[in-house]
Length: 281
Figure 1: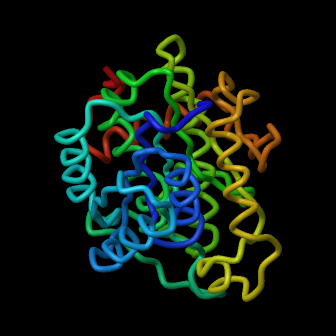
Figure 2: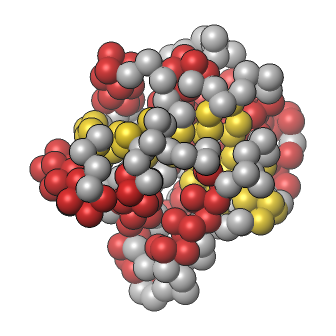
């Protein structure tokens, strides 16, 4: 993506942190930006800020709480009604570990473990819902913003009904994103769509990090640099099915490379979102 002036980019979680700063960066390069958030008033404020900061009026806002699969479906429908091509989907929105030491298990509106749904499953649904316009825009990209913090999935207790701990829930959801990345990249080979997962930077100065860790190690700007590299650099243009640690190809938790485990996750995910298994066309 040498030029972004004719590109359409959707970023989830674009009203704060990495998503917001990435939106400013890409809008400044002339792209059409589709911003997602869950608070409509905050979304409208972000929209105005972004237009002013970038000088780009090609910005739209879509509201959806990822704790509701129905809202994800409605958002996807709204995007599809307005756009026929999507060149870059950045699945960035997420919940962190919450307050440190938190042990209260939380559920989504759909009765699913909250972090598993918000960080992974709702993006799984959104991605498959938008695949027609992603494929029609090829060459195009999907980037799942994951984390170096990953925890193996226990399929006998995927909803963590036993021994719940919020940071484990977060780490499990982040590995699920990587597993989804590898499977989807394989499924889409030959279509012109590439799919990668990214750990943008360690403990960036975001509200999510401050809430759990109380301190930071890197900046959001470093994370945006890594995201921009994976999204637009010539070096990463044809790389697919990989996990990046910033700008370097790296290795995720070993379970990510277990085809049987990925198959279990895929089958369960299609069932949970009410889609036919393998319906990517």
